[in-house]
Amino acid sequence: METVTNLIDFIKDEFVPEPKQIPERIKKDLTLDLDDIFCPFCGRPLEYYFTNKPRLLITIKYDITLRVVHQRCVNEECIAAASNRSFYNPSLDMYMLPKKMYAMDVVLLIGYLIQQENKTEEEAANYLLEEHGIRISQPSVNKYKRIALALGEALIVGNAERIKSGLDKMPFRVYSIDGLSSNRSRTLFIIRDLISGAVLGSALLDKHDAEAIHDFMDAVFQKFGVPDYMVGDGERGLIAAVRKYYSDIPYQYCQRHFLNNLGVDLMEDLYKALKKN
Ligand SMILES: [Zn+2]
Image (cartoon, rainbow, N blue to C red; front, side, top):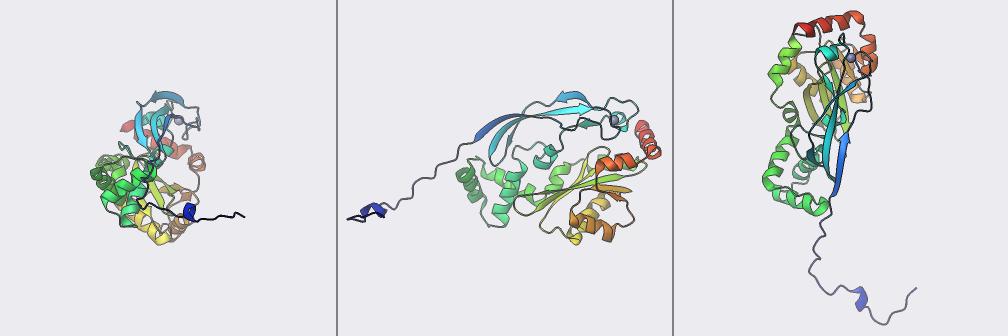
């Protein structure tokens, strides 16, 4: 308990708000390596291939100078070697957009500020500066707002025709589907061609039910063709969508199990198709 003889110390006597302290950015120098060093197709150890030149990436918390390590399979009988597939850490595509400086968390936040909180582009830019120390121009906010609205198109970066013609030459299609939860209770779903790793589509979904996921899958299948096999994680809505709408397409939880179960014959077909291309 305190005894006082005046309340002046407890009253604020100036009404101009103190200028907000702009948070300091934390700088990081990172090399993104692979933790799984075995070829997912043949099981042989991967070998070092090359490291990308550093690129600047801005996340909500960090300014990252990032280098990405690529590895490759050198087993001449493996489809990964035949297709000249390079492997890098899959988290890169989950959190970073190709050729973009701002990471997925910043993109999602811009989309959220504008769509959910109805901020103007200028207000969003000010918010990013005052709350997170991120300097971004209003035209950039506009650009990233559009990306947040159409993430799928941004990820595919205009390669759709080339990717589709590659898929058409394969004896069968295998797609992988992954869900990444964002901090705003939405999930980013990404569909890829398992053999090449090419992204076929992505969508930021508010709802994770079978219908919402089916709509997204259907749009991708119409564009690139219906897969003969699918691999994915244990996401409940995803499994429900597969059971309800694609019960005739074999679905496997785990990529590694899928590749192990695929069998020598199917692998050989794939290998020959790749050699021919
Ligand atoms: Zn291999």
